[in-house]
Length: 104
Image (cartoon, rainbow, N blue to C red; front, side):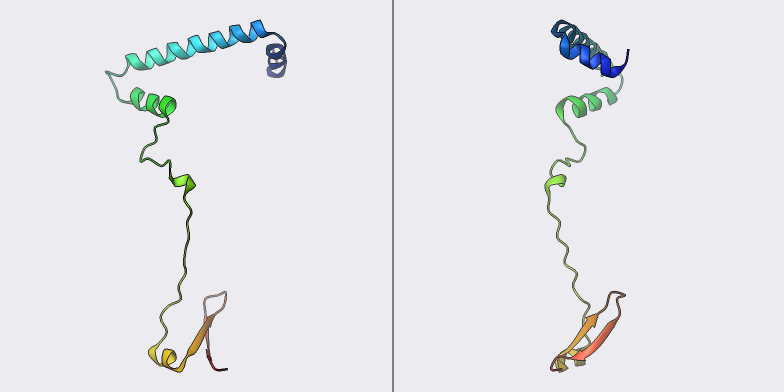
């Protein structure tokens, strides 16, 4: 049966939807129980359950997505004599600098 047809039948027949949901829940419980039985043998099932059922994230990255990042690009230091003269060094897109007098 095509997936679209199945979805339409599920929407039209509440009993079918209820039976399907019941089956999915039974499968879910069976899988969780199987994972819990494996906890004594390996920590992997516990890690999986923490991540999938309780939203656990390694390194607590939950706040990383909501942070604003601001970067300030400061120019390099001017030579002392250029600073004393009030010389402005303008940088072009290629990164090269052209000196000009501040009074000009």
